[in-house]
Image (cartoon, rainbow, N blue to C red; front, side, top):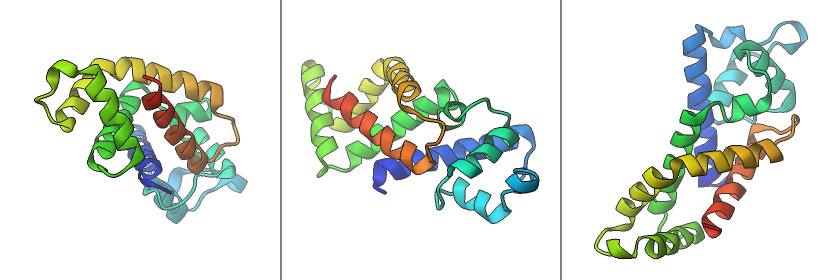
Length: 170
């Protein structure tokens, strides 16, 4: 796992925890009978320490009353906004990474009149100006690419591919 994938998993964990609070659920409420998932597994998944595999995914969907894996992995626009924002900030902090170079080039080309601003400020401007477009693009890509059998680790890799492709092509 790299930083982008870990960032996705951390955001997913926070989002699941938030949904649990909103619905009054605890780690003891996941699954029933054969689908029962033990509380330590739930905690490890929420804390990005364990993969949310297919057999556990069904228990999460059932308990959180979600109709499919897309609804869990990309719950709503606000989740996508937070995810994209934190990813761009993460990329901006990793000044030696390939993605940083791609992002910095994109920002300098897009905001030539703002040469006096640092990259962090340009990232903030870029996010505010493009968050709806990026969110729509992400959701469309994921709806096309997600399968019902994908684990959270696989989705994290797919998300990393999306952000790299998006930055290269915009």
